[in-house]
Image (cartoon, rainbow, N blue to C red; front, side):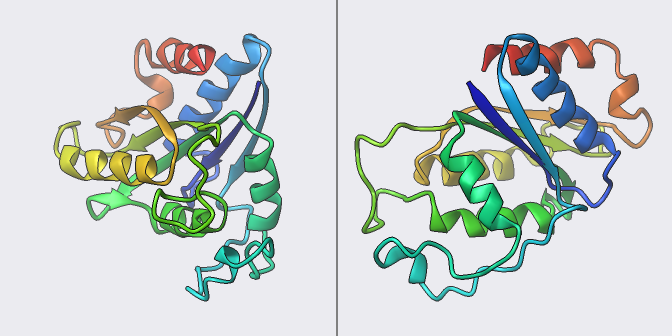
Length: 185
């Protein structure tokens, strides 16, 4: 099994990166091959809305680091997307990545959608400083539905709350829980 991860946080060694890393570590311990990107190390430009990716086999015409991520997605079985919660939703870095998935993931309404396409698994991680993990639940469910419409098999959404007072790496039992998420993929 091949699993890719993206920590869509500007903090390369922050809570989101730590959680995504533990999930991938758990998957590796079960024999999966993993690759992780940090949005702080890659250049992802915004979608231009040109629809070139929907015409023929050209793919996305924007030449940036998404080209190598597209290749990894194509060859993967699962994706782990981690994002801090900024202004009640995913980070801008996560949104850029999500918008650019339009070139390779097709909703039921896209011209290149095939019903028999194997659905890739997706685990979504949100880290937030607010202690109320249900505060943004409606947004998290909306996000889950959007990824399902793109043809992904959303396994779960994990919300790691109260990271302002206690970093994710110090939360009792979180390391084992996240490694178990990875192992279950």
